[in-house]
Image (cartoon, rainbow over all chains, first blue to last red; front, side, top):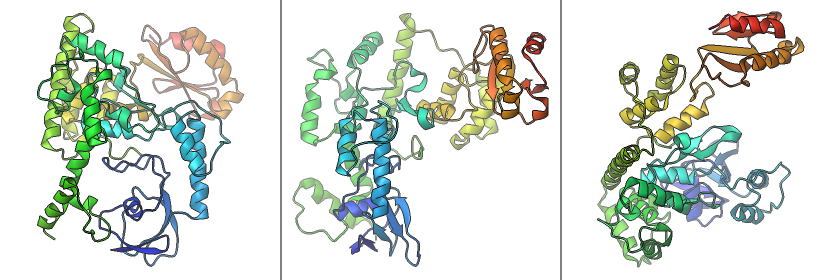
Length: 279
Length: 194
């Protein structure tokens, strides 16, 4: 299907979101809570764009990460109105996390350096990446949200021992601001109380049975670094991405017909599968 | 904004087996902690009562709010063992249930007293001295608004308007209205509830 992005006509696929299509076209849209290994969520609102459906007169402001492309959809991502709204959102983020370098940089990139609102000092911007990663990628559901409105926070039920947590570290990895940190001392304590050593890579399903030379001090884990160097990301995130590519081959198909430049083995695999799928 | 968290999704087989591993470890960890005297054994949920509620709602996870409402009606708050039981039975993550239970103000996670005292802090009651009645209640019960007395006799709550401003200042105890209060009358009314 064809859509119009900032005046230029583009091919887009059924099931793509406006954000997917815009990114495929190389258009810069800030999106903090969007992650390619996770379902869209719509928490940060920074990815707002103006859209107009075919045959309609009115331009509407929507979150591009949640808005599916439609035939003849017109999208404007850089209008005066969008810039103004986005700056406002960034001001609010800056008021919540004035000391988080990530937030400061992001705001500065869109021309916001100070906020008119009273400041908190909470590095957590409630993007929900950690919560969703724990649920969707790991399946542990060790952390979730609690409360609402200004009291909303990332929390564990009853704040008690996190026996559901396998210390995989995905939450700290996906956290953009560094608000989520591992309590290694506590993890160790929990393990001692459990009476046996538990390796997070065993729990993640990467190692059959681990004998650890570091006496299970996960903070110094070598496997961690090795996996990260190989995958370029957290091993669980890498696996989630691979699974996603396999189960939804269309999601990763390029917007325009693929050029013949796919050289990496990972890229070779996908088109073959796609061809096998019935049209 | 909460769409998508913890909802039913088809998961690859590898992830399912990992979830089973996590559950197994979770169980063994809890058992060991209890055996070592580091934790008190979890209180047993009132399984029969919860089962009755679950069956009434067809054991459907999308009925979770109605289920929690029924549980709260029965127990007057949401006890942790019961929530964990529901989490297991309906396969809803505990984090999800906790998020729902803390999101809605109507749900309570703390045990409530035998009598529910609601004092109106609306405009009319405010003008007629509601604040002083509040002080008197707090002094006489020894708890602040939102609290429960140690003997579990009263829970004290302030509300915005009870809809009978002609009776101001007004409060309800277990739904019964006590109007035209002052700081002296309040003590007697409270004493009549055991």
